[in-house]
Length: 240
Image (cartoon, rainbow, N blue to C red; front, side, top):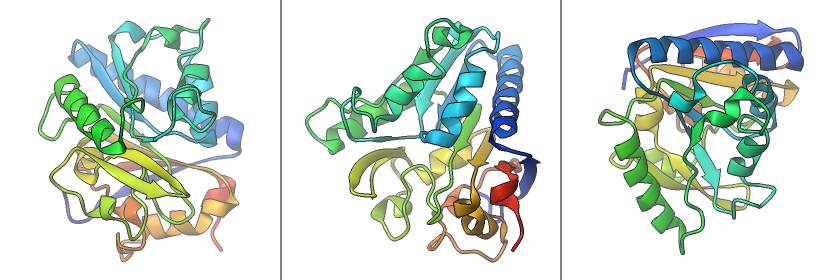
């Protein structure tokens, strides 16, 4: 990982424009990837903010049958649970009736006996699915928590220290989670943070601050070679 990532901030007027901006950027990156390779690989975030973008992305006319989709993290709950990110993806990006339904989705296997078993299975799957060591995704879409976490790398947890595994167990907000680790997040060709709302304002300022430390803001652990694209609405990006 590089020592000091650079960030490119783009600000949308509101949540609707943010969703469209995000969808269009991902579609463009997928187009570029599929021009160069037979398949494209993207890792997506859960949450309400990206869900709006996924609904727009579902309507983009791309060769979705050549796109492999995974989640950057998942709550360790059944796939039918309202808290499941996989369920959210199936209701948005993968919804029937839109072109995006043709994407090949590879959910985290949360039906296994333990979170550790899910980690092992998902790690093996990601390694086989996506080339590179660590695997290199074409797009890594991440959220940003108001506490500075991203994926399921929460401040003060062991998940933030993992450097040898591709996948780890995260713990946050009362749930066990399965998460890609910082080396995988950082290996992506393009990392995008999607940030919305006034509650994220301080976390975004910390992310963009060169002096901020990852111990307090684990999103700073994401250190790709290419500049990080930060898409935010005006509420999140507003200066104090």
